[in-house]
Each structure stands twice: as structure tokens, then as C-alpha cells.
Length: 306
Image (cartoon, rainbow, N blue to C red; front, top):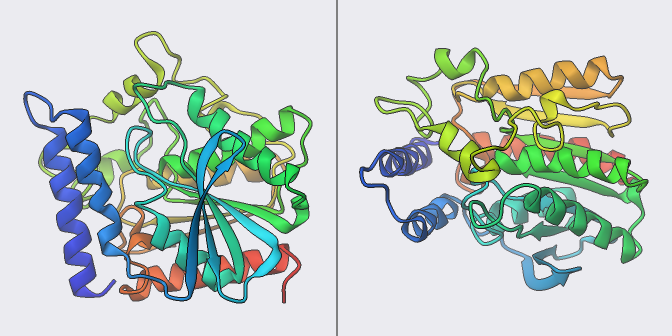
């Protein structure tokens, strides 16, 4: 990333990290307002129109680049630890991806925890996918992308679609995915000093996010939300990107290993020196722009585009 963008994103992550450690806790509404500034790192993609839409009961937003193919689409799922983030925080970043791929993107705005606990988030994401199929989009011309918690939801949408007898998409792209609700993995320890969002001097209590999503008696090993315990057979080709200095790097690596074992075609790429969801620097950060170019190059042929 450029120094300016890296400094801004790192500073924002450290602000969010510090807010998570406040005692008494920051009110949820204030925390969400703070998270809405996540998208400030992203430049406007230019040449992209936005239109809010009801996607079968799920609030969503179309990102429509000028000259985009009308019959291909990306379903995009925002991150935010299941408790924050929105289609507005990620509007510009997914707009960059849509423009690079030359297709429209539907950015889903799923219900947030703890007001709405699992399976609301999976239901909304899967519902948005089913709505796209109902609109006449062919599954072989549809791909799914998501970052952080949205990366796990992107994979879960394909698992739930499969289990409901729906055709799966042509590809799925988890970006810095988080889905291990037990919060294990080696890099949660080895990268604690380098991860500006989850780590540092006062590491974020990821168990709080698990509680917010599942409640007191929820099961963090439930395969309907933790893909590490799911049967991944039949998933579409997968392209995982993760930052080399983020604590949840191991989530992506373990997903790749399990998917390959299940016979899924998997590409995994680690961007050394990058923070969690560095893609939010799109339009200002060479590393973010490179990641988006690679995503577009991977997905276009899977959607039947040259």
C-alpha cells in the first residue's frame, strides 16, 4: 500500500481496536458509526452508478459500472464482525471490483448481531443469492465475493444453496475471511503484534463477536456458520486472498486446505505485509488495486468473459 493509505487504514484499525477495549463498552450505535468510516480509505471508482434495491426482503445495492455486462453479476457481502459494516461502507470497494471485472455487483445488506443472531446473516446472504437466480441470472454467470465476516458468509451462502437444492455459483472469492468462531489458528498468536485491527497492545476480544452472533448458548462449531466444520463437497472454484500480517490469516489457509481435500478447485494468495481487508484502499493503494485486478482476472473467465 502507499504510505498515506497504509497509515490511514492502520490508524483507523487502531481506533476501532481501542474502542473495543473501552470500559464501559462503547455503545453499539457509536461503534457502528465509527465503523462506517472504514470506507473513507477507498477512492470513488468513477463510472459506477449505485441503486438501492429490495433483494427479496434483503436490503441491497446495485453497483453498475458503465459498459458492464448485463447478464453477469457478483454478489458481494460486506465484513464488520457480524455486528457492523454495511453496503455503504463497502460500496466503493465493491464498485472497484465490479468495474475491474466488467460486471454489475449486488451488495447485500444483511441483518446485524446481536439484535439479529445466527442464522439471520446466513439466511439474508443466501436469500440475496436466491433472489438473483429468481431474476434470471444463470449460476454459471454469477460469482460471490465477501471480506472478513462476509468472506465466511460468501462460502456459507454456497453451502446453504447447495443444501437447498439450488445451483451454486461459478466461483466464490473470500477476502481476509473470518469464520473460526472458536478463534483458534496459529496466526492469532504469531501476528498479534502486526495486526492493527485485531492485535496490538490490547488485542480485540474476538470471543465477544462470537457471543454477539451466537448468544450465550450458541455452538461455535456449528457447521452452518463455521465452515471449518462443514462438508465443503460441491463448492464452486474458490480464490482466497489474505494479508500476511493479519491475525486471522490462518482462517483462509485452513479453508483452502479443507476445500482442496473436498475436491474443490482452490487458489490461495497471501499478500505479504498487508493488513486485514487491505482491499479497502482501492483506488489509492497499489496493493489493493493489484488484489482487485487479480480477483477480476480470476473471475472473468469463470463468468464466460474474455
